[in-house]
Length: 142
Image (cartoon, rainbow, N blue to C red; front, side, top):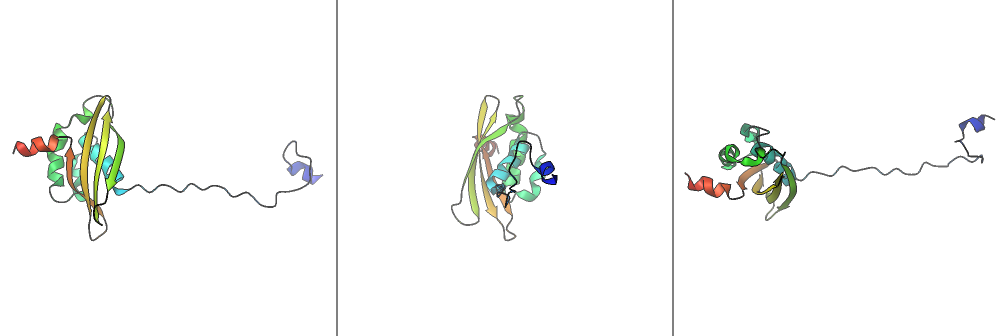
């Protein structure tokens, strides 16, 4: 009679399962460096984060490029929160990733290109960034 209390409702046989079926475990996808950086660059270029948030994540002229682009970039001014629609990266040589992403903000779509370089400490840092043709205008105005 005690086995009747442990059986699921509607089950009449006295067999017990021998083993528990294996459960599918979800392995979290690793975020690739260019995807992680695209999100960070978007946060800075849309005004969600200050430029100095990228200080430890940039090398060379990349920080100066961000400092010039961020105040003039209209990504955060169109009302809709910008999102990354697509992000692709290519590794031309070990330790370098060249990436591009498309950013949508409402009806507006912009392109961003950036280069990542891996240091001796194995950390990835942004070495260059361009937003559409903004970098060309910034270099011409100097």
